[in-house]
Length: 237
Image 1 (cartoon, helix red, strand yellow):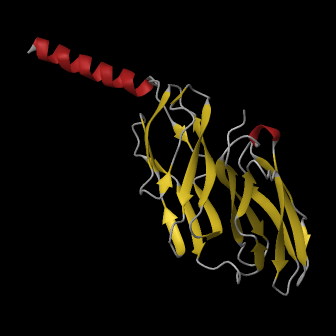
Image 2 (cartoon, one colour; image 1 turned 180 degrees about the vertical axis):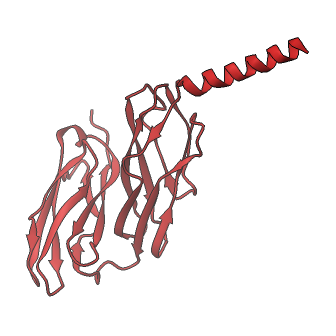
Image 3 (cartoon, one colour; image 1 turned 180 degrees about the horizontal axis):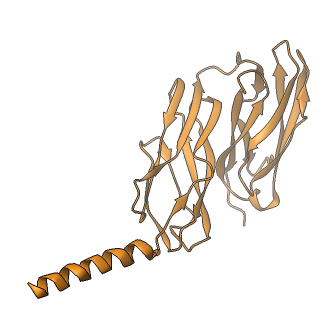
């Protein structure tokens, strides 16, 4: 009986110590969990980068990112983060022949003890891009080819305001290290403005498919995501 009492006392002491000692534990924090691409064209790739932060006091291991379907990919820069470290996951969505509103929710599995965390992307996929509202963008898919006879490192595109209100616009998503965008900050009702995309020096020799997203200040906060395709049809000597 005395031995049993000693065991009971020891168990109580262990529980009390466990309640007061903070064991090291990993934690994943997502500053942004949802991204809306807005209007996107069919048969294109669009992408957005989400930051993943290690905010616990132990190493965070990102064990798996489950895209949710074959139309979505989620390449990760690194999968082991020390406390205070961060990394980026790029969610890439292939619009294929989808139509109208599409939602995808990739899951992130880590060594946290809490349930998996999720990201969400939203897109409104268009079969036709010449009758959108409140603006019409032309072209709605930008090609920047490089070949033996042609090298296009910059290109202009137009945005026509087909609404009855002046609109302000802002760039809300742009991939790092590929290109820069010049845009006016406002477009008056019924007018057309010109924007320009320019490849950055380090991306001139790269093949890639990326995108950028513009938001307008109409009542719906309308967004448009423009795919950008860099093709290279020969190899430099």
